[in-house]
Image (cartoon, rainbow, N blue to C red; front, side, top):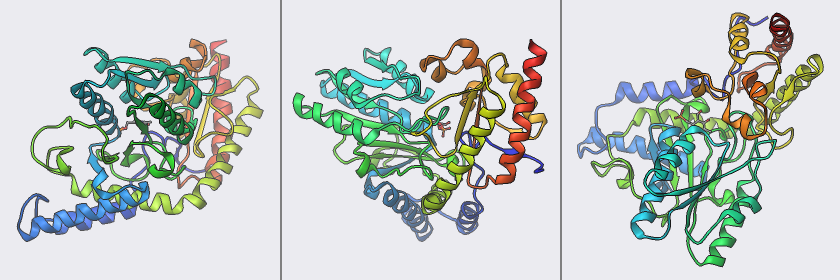
Length: 391
Ligand SMILES: Cc1ncc(COP(=O)(O)O)c(C=O)c1O
């Protein structure tokens, strides 16, 4: 049996050796600031622009549309506040549409804007964590400036119909004869589903490197040309004035290297993970009949498994699994500090008890059949033990 079984890739996937090598090679050779005019500066700028081209190609965007950030949270904040403030300045509207099941980065950016007079519609999700394009279309008003809907849910793995939502938004744009920007939080997408902005039809798209084998502390925000936008960070002219501050060149290199690999491997990796995911889902469901699968069966990320175990405390379950060698999560890692029941599960209609007894197992590129066998031997036993001590 493997020593440790890491099933928390949705929180953070280990740095890929290729990304580490590319970053180390740059850092060893590195001398300059990409804004400097000397040779060392130009070399740094070259490396940064190569990384930007790689990311842009994968997103089907132009390199001038890609801005490097410090991660998913910054990308999402910048997208939402950047568009909202530009539209506020232009006097075009103050209404934003999002969903109740978004990551806290989106929900709290929207709540922040509400303090300054923005109105936000939080669309309810169905019991699988999904919304329909018609839900979005029906919420659009003549004051709507931004729609922000996540591509794939980090807790329950639901994959939302972004391309169809984009078509519904464009139709409303034509009917109202005004622009509505569409942002998608695609942090959980790379390596699992295509993050091609052109096919998705979005204006803004957020990524975070550590979710696909890049380093922590770096992400990207792609912003289509002509999208109304004000930067959050004021200072120098870096990143075409969209994000001031000296760039994290090594981070951008690591991110681009990991993204290129994740996307190149996707045709082989995603079906393999889907098979392992289904084995894990079916195995847990058949040994624990009271277990409730959270999220859809079909429109689901290839690496996501999420169950509620009624009568079992989620925190105790995580601790017990950790002692047995399994690294898992109760939903989103960020919720752990406060240990609140998942807002996503509550939005999907789960009870407080069901939401408090949830377990997310998220697979990654390196997950093996042997690890799934081991997880299937451990998880049902630990759940049964905890349920019996509580009963
Ligand atoms: C869907 C989603 N959005 C945003 C974030 C925030 O990304 P970061 O941790 O890079 O700030 C995460 C991280 O868990 C996420 O899963």
